[in-house]
Length: 151
Image (cartoon, rainbow, N blue to C red; front, side, top):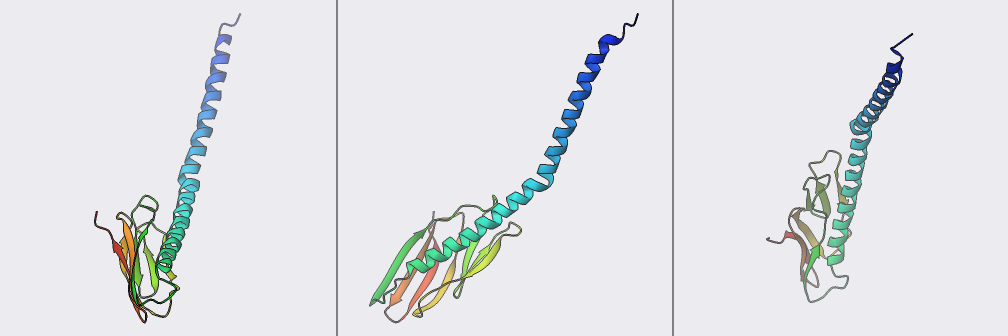
């Protein structure tokens, strides 16, 4: 009479658990090693594009359509605090808005569509500070400045 048959269910269950654990480990490694980081990078790049577009719209909307004898506009700008968990910067260079981000693959430029009477656009917004766009000038010329509000 055999007395070792009582171990067969225990060995079978142990092997089954081992196979399931190996499968879970393989799937986790695959997702966190390639799929999830790629999706996070794509999301950060998309958010960067949206931030650049929102910043451009904020600057363009601050400039009055009709010329006036005196122009003084100060408009608050609401932008996300981080892209990919890191702060970023928007800076104006002449009539272009530039997104500088430490996140790899995130950045770009956007040309600003402004009236001819706008003589220049300058300044910088950092994402970790409140921002405003200031337009000053007269009927023939005005300037646009990106400013940070002191905290």
